[in-house]
Image (cartoon, rainbow, N blue to C red):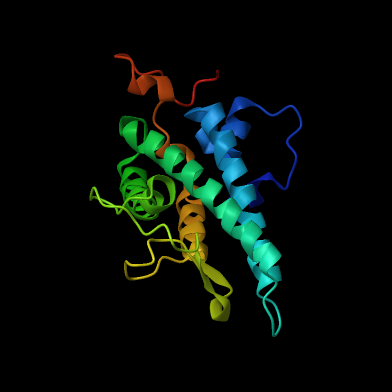
Length: 193
């Protein structure tokens, strides 16, 4: 994940400005920023397992199943992070809110069948007699949406889109702390603390 590339250099006793420059989401929430780091680490592990499982002429199901299991956890966490940020849209730039809206819609489409075993937007069950994810050996990927719905949603594509959105976040996208979404008086995002 490109998002994690920003952490290759260790900051020694950084100023608040240096910290926020490297990790703008800290200005919104230390906790949420940490959850994004965890999700990106999971994403890297998912991709590594897909590459390992779908290498060569045969499929090794163990790493592919590990990728699928991690993808389920990743999906639940990613949706909650994006939903939390979208709910606090006054804390972010309009550009970022638009990106989050699109990502939230995509994540919701695959989260409903995975988490609730329901079709998105309907009070109807997805089939229980199915694999948790379809295997796309040709593209070394997983299909993670309801298998009866089309088009298929690629795990790699959704991981890449999450990374694109979060890698694009800059200081100017974070306007206020998370608490400002619940309080009347916003605390400026880039003040220390």
